[in-house]
Image (cartoon, rainbow, N blue to C red; front, top):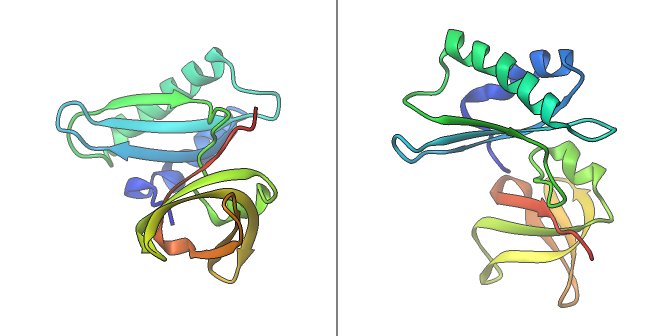
Length: 152
C-alpha cells in the first residue's frame, strides 16, 4: 500500500483537522536539496488558497519543532485534484465505483500498471474491473501508487 513517510499522518492530522480540513495524504519525494514534501488536504466544499496557506503555516511550525523529515525540502500543500491519490484502505472503499489507475511495486501477471473501475477491497486485495476486460485482485500492500482517473 502507498506508504506515508515518517509517520507524518499521526503528527499532522490533529492540526489539519482543527483547521477544518481532511488530511488526504502525504508524499515525500527525496532529491537532495530539491526534495519535496507534499501534503494533500480536502474539505467537503472544496479547498481554497486560504486553506492551503493556513495549513502550510500550521504544518511548517510543527515540522520545525518536531523535525521528523531529515535534510532540506520544499513543503507543498494542495487539494487532491481530480486525479485524487488514494493512500489508505478507507480510500479504496470510499471510491468504489470510480475509475482508477494503479502502479504496483512489482509486476502482477506480467505488468505493473492497471486501469479500470475500482470495485473496492476483498480481504487485502484491491479489486479492479479492468478497462481491457476481466477483473483482477491486486495485493493492497504492493500498490505503489493509486489515483482516481477523471472521466471526461
